[in-house]
Amino acid sequence: MRKLIAGNWKMNGLTGDAIDLCRNVRDGVQALTHVEWLVCPPHIHLPLVNDVPKGGQDCSVHEFGAHTGDVSALMLKDMRCDYCIVGHSERRQNHNETNEVIRQKAERVIQAGMTAIICVGEILDERNDGNAFTVVERQIRESLPAIASADSVVIAYEPVWAIGTGESATADDVLDMHGKIRQLLESLVASGDTIRIIYGGSVKPANASELMNLDHVDGALIGGASLSADDFIAIGNAVNKR
Ligand code: PGA
Image 1 (cartoon, rainbow, N blue to C red):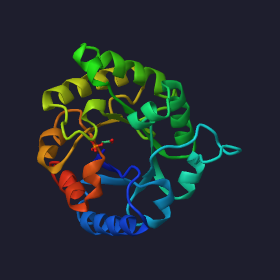
Image 2: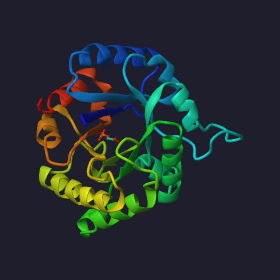
Image 3: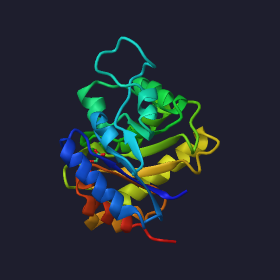
């Protein structure tokens, strides 16, 4: 499977920004088919993003109904989304989302016919205490749906202390963590050897070629740098062409 280069625009930009960014990404990636590109705009901007594969940033645990302000996985699919991010650390921290809630959301995404990008990652204290993998292992065990497969799930390893800080994890740390996640996935799911494991946390053009070409690094989830089409495309360009 090709590496996945996914941009998470978070809650940024107005309509003109979304239209411009989409156009610049679309024009820039057309000839670059060695990776799979994805952009995840704010939900309200999804109709403005066309001709670039797109995904949601979150979805409801419910299918439909009286859930004011929520957006269902089926609505995202109906907007022609192929993916939906679930369990981003900003959702875990700011909306108290638990592993159980994230598992339910991932199930909704899969049932709607999309691929769930399930985010996991430790906070700095947990890393400093030597518990980074213990935390990530528990997040994966508790948030991976039983129906997960290589087509329906991507794991995004995003150390919380590296998100938006400009300080990415080191190549050694990423290699180590992704190798352990791979072993865990192999023990949990039949297609665990091919489920994509992408890295997120201050990925930028300057560190992309070092991080993106490591074993078991199957792409990137990019926040800040995805708001610049040039930087976003440069990250995908840093992936070795085989
Ligand atoms: P960042 O964000 O690239 O700005 O660190 C990554 C993310 O939140 O997915």
